[in-house]
Image (tube, rainbow, N blue to C red):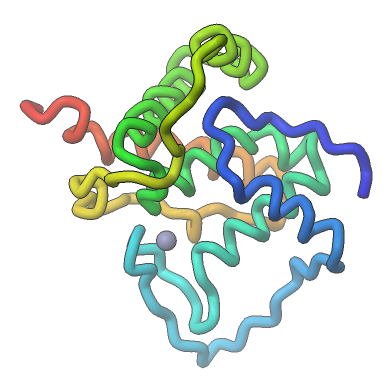
Length: 186
Ligand SMILES: [Zn+2]
């Protein structure tokens, strides 16, 4: 596989590594023939409208594969894709969920670059032995109750510009939809 230059920031889930391994081992098929008669269903976690055999996880794998294969075009939003997927599927433990959301806000609203985020987090956690897990531990139950306005199903995969724009829209919608968790009074 070609050299990978990805933008994983602080909360790098295990999935990135495993996907990279898998991508290297199997040919990628991003071309799906979809029959018109296929039934759709909803992802129980994020509410995404999916085709019969599709899952959010499979779509996420496809996104990561595109990002690894095209680190400049698709991979430009890698730091957003991973955080969005993990946040929306409530995969982070409670404290980490809040921290990851805050990180997403800094990416989007303050224009913090992934490299800068890595530097900040290195400083923040320097010398500190992390005793907690990113994904294990109690989750925020409020997250499960959020009705999400955009999901991974809204991200177009066939064009890198559309892809990046859609991922950014998805990230912005996640911040908006989850505001009540951060500011319960609103
Ligand atoms: Zn989902």
